[in-house]
Length: 72
Image 1 (cartoon, one colour):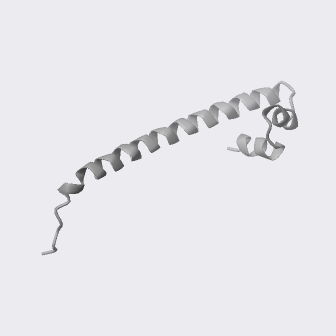
Image 2: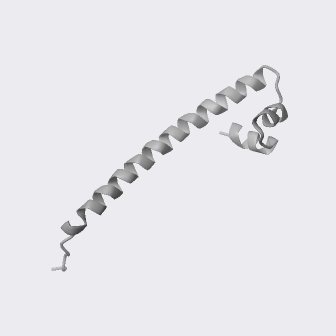
């Protein structure tokens, strides 16, 4: 039989790791939602006649950054 260690002394660290992981997953989901909203807003501006360069200038980023943000 394999020798197993008593990890109970490390339980606070394991609990904190679980909490941090849950928070990271939550924040990743929020980031996806915000990216979708940003993409929809920018596409709306383009549909109204603004160029990617116009949007980039206003946001202080490159046109290439706008292209990446619009990519699915």
